[in-house]
Structures are given as structure tokens and as C-alpha cells.
Image 1 (cartoon, rainbow, N blue to C red):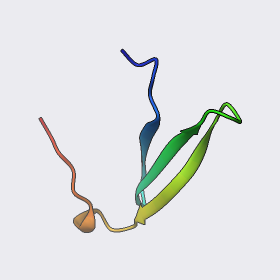
Image 2 (cartoon, rainbow, N blue to C red; image 1 turned 90 degrees about the horizontal axis):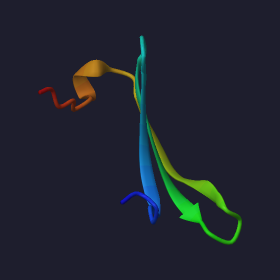
Image 3 (cartoon, helix red, strand yellow; image 1 turned 60 degrees about the vertical axis):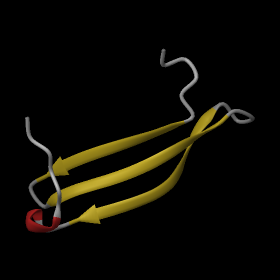
Image 4 (cartoon, rainbow, N blue to C red; image 1 turned 90 degrees about the vertical axis):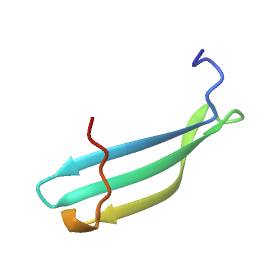
Length: 51
């Protein structure tokens, strides 16, 4: 059930690396607030899980 989600993580990749953003839900404003952001510009420093 995803109706009560209070946090989410977003991963974006491009030719330069990976960007990670974490958000928390603000019920009062009915919107997502950015909590943290991290840029990994070298693929060797990024941990990726493959299945």
C-alpha cells in the first residue's frame, strides 16, 4: 500500500554520473520537500546493484 508514503528517493543517471535526491512528505503544504542531494560524478564511486 503506497497511500501513506512519507519519504522517497529518486536516482537520476546521465553521461556524467548519478544524482541521488531524498524527499520527505510535507502534509501541511501537501508537497514533497528535498531533504538531501548527492552527486556522484565518477561511475567508479557509485554503487549500483544489478540483477
